Length: 320
Figure: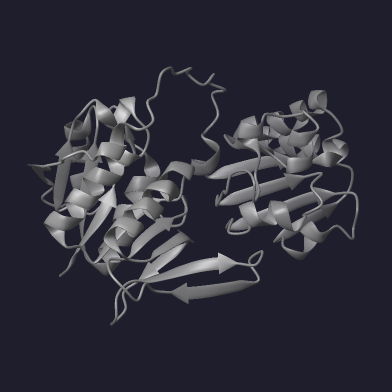
């Protein structure tokens, strides 16, 4: 069976959930070979093996932290040359998409972004995508070279499948471009205690209907009762009510949780592009004609300041 490279997203050896999802999908099209880079790369092996990695290629160097994405592209190019994989899988984060695009260019192949599923095909892996505000599902494959595919977080359930996970050192030679842009400072993000937006299983978002920054407390209360991340529409972010890092939409972050709750969000195409692949969508809006209701699984026509607090209390009551 052909091997499939999986780029490992980790922090100091702690593997992030989207990588485990990639390993699950990789097993559908071949044998996963994980590529772990940077500080703590070797510490990822046990978890990766538990989730199906037959091999773990590691390389630790200061360049991965000191510079932007090019050193990681150099390493994946070296891994592709060593393995000759059937595909390269990367998580669909902003950095992941840049890595994928640069790698595909170097390999002389095609890139597919924001896949929500993978299938084995006679002519190579087939990527499933949800497009045009979830109105259509497309299936695509790369016709030339090694397919480079980015996959949205929460697209697959994590399925453990113990494998050998043999650790092997990857030989990497950094290109001249690798040191073109240096990271000169870092400021730790202030923790909210909530899940990371793109990886969260539940997201509660507020929009223009929230009416002001102080009213986002209603959205946060529901999110905290559900153990959810908090999102915001572009209108709310542009008004200064909530940080841009929490924006969901075409110019913000793309999310695909098990449950997405939209409160006071009309459902403009820009917002729908960032949450349309959510498994279950619930909307609360006092405008019965709001476009968001065309997309939802469950809709409540009503004032969010009446509905959301009642929902929060019901969730707390059932949990308590």
